[in-house]
Length: 443
Image 1 (cartoon, rainbow, N blue to C red):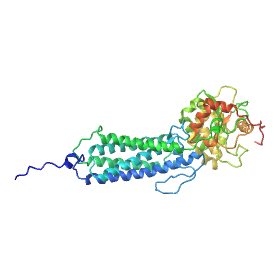
Image 2 (tube, rainbow, N blue to C red):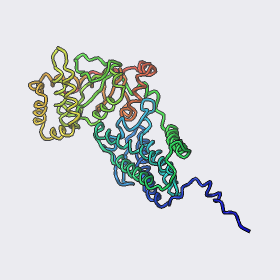
Image 3 (tube, helix red, strand yellow):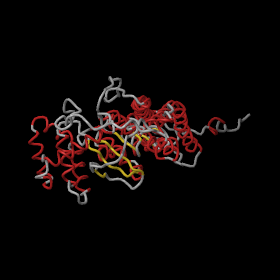
Image 4 (cartoon, one colour):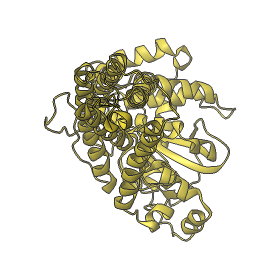
């Protein structure tokens, strides 16, 4: 009896996976998985450091290319980047915002899962490797964007961030090789189920981590957020010591600053980068932390700050006529840009610093170091004494209310939004000013 020819097995008919050799894609997929795992590690470090600072305290942070290296306390490129307005989103509605590193962690965790799954199965379709390639392009694009922002806008580089950039590149290269070496005959089709399903899986990873993060973020003190921490005795400026700063025509605000203070520079950059500066009518009160002119400090915390403060006053004009606001802004921008070099020069050669200022801004020559400008700067310091201003910079007063020191970094946008709201205005109006403090001390 002749048997009928054998038909293809049911397994062969319904096996959707191609018959290509699994070894061609497995190694690239393992490379992609390793890169994604490295990216997850660095993103987790960055997210952890960010979350620690949500308690409004100062903490050491990771800033090393070496996984597991000790944290650093003090100024570093990683801290500068973390405190910048580009490190998180939704800062006006969430204290500190939602960190970009959190979304990076979710993305890398998802890519790790996908790459490991495909490598373990051994026979990915071209739609699956194509999806992995497109998904890995997201962190690569963000690498290009944030690398540019780090150099061009923040002016600092973060070693942990560079680790994330390297990991993003490795993931993309691994995914690209896997797709190119995929011997499957099936066409790459974004409308196929595996592509659509993978997209929603990735969204679920990001959504889950975001909701978890928001559920565990600390709740700010509503009273301090709305009304601040203390108030001025009087915001009046009888001696015309306040200098207008670039801002809008909204709520009157006063920034107490030192032109050679690194924290003042960082605060100014955060405020300018936010949309909230346009809602303020901002003026500066100079408060140099330099014992050359400031009798309230025993040493020059920021050497040369007195000379630069005099230059700002001289550039703006000391007479009764209109002020040259643009010239004042130029001196401040120059001081912020060259802070470290100016402080180093002032440590050893105060006269050299003053000569450099006069060379850069010829308009101040004949005024810098004179009795008139010294008297004006002394009056600025006496304004601070009369209002019982703490001896530190920067400080921001919205109306008469002083923003809490711990809210001037990650919480700046959220707190300022609250203080400028109707509830904030009402809360600030109820705060009574302290007793009048007579300006005193020996200049």
